[in-house]
Length: 204
Image (tube, rainbow, N blue to C red; front, side):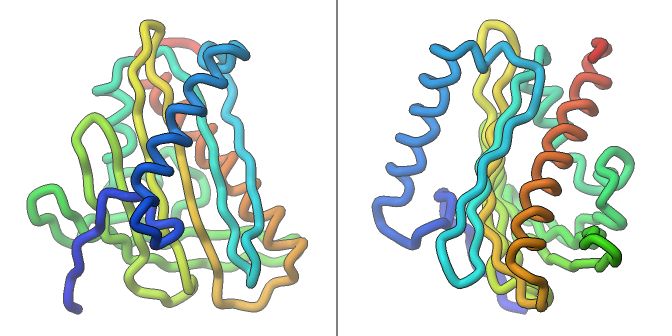
């Protein structure tokens, strides 16, 4: 497989302005949370929108009283994600070249009365202690699976912001897919936050 570099954008629009739009939205999120008190909250929040043709955009965040280094260590613990994320069946680093990694993951999704395992081969670009960009290069179960994690240090701890654009290529009713995508993202953020708290030696 020929590797391609992942640009330092959220890869959500393909627009040359996507980087600056992403930075603006990130800053706006921080400003909104500061005024609403959300930065000091202890819960994960997720919002989702449908952009048409079965593509969903997910935005989520949580605040945690921990150091940026601990949060970063959890987010980049690719070989052990299955130890603290319940939907993850397998995750392993296949290769690493500088700040670019290839990570193979297999996860299980629950669709009402049945479940399905999904596979991604993520090309990941890290900006240490700041951001992670990822994109599925296998396209086995997803036509589109791309997103990011971002860290923003505050006086009280760290704000973790998650973005995902996803379009599956297997048949599931739209209303089921919407529920599964949002629930899965919320569970992911809650479980990642719990692991950060655990490694910080704090109580939930």
